[in-house]
Amino acid sequence: MPEGVRLAVDQLVEGVPLKLLFIAANLPEARTAERVLLQGRVDFVLDAGRFAFAKPFFQGWEYFGLFFYVSTAQYQRGRYLVESVGLEVEGGLG
Image (tube, rainbow, N blue to C red; front, side, top):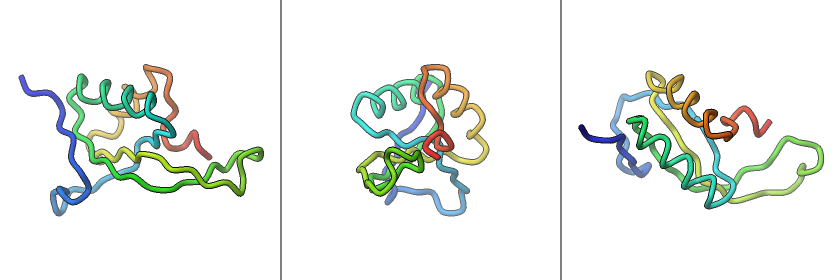
């Protein structure tokens, strides 16, 4: 059985609605999210970019991260998998 599929933003399938699942703030988080989503057969799209925390101590600072997007149909499964390994889904960043 094939595992999940990792795509870059320029490989998006037109017409597939996506939802932001997770923002990896560092390489260990990105590798963990990638591993669990691939093993769980959840297709995802990656995009690198800047983000800011909404938490008081971190306000005003920008960080570079890796954004994990999944189809809206696979969002709940992806959320379960990411949270099962101790990572916070996108809402955890504020």
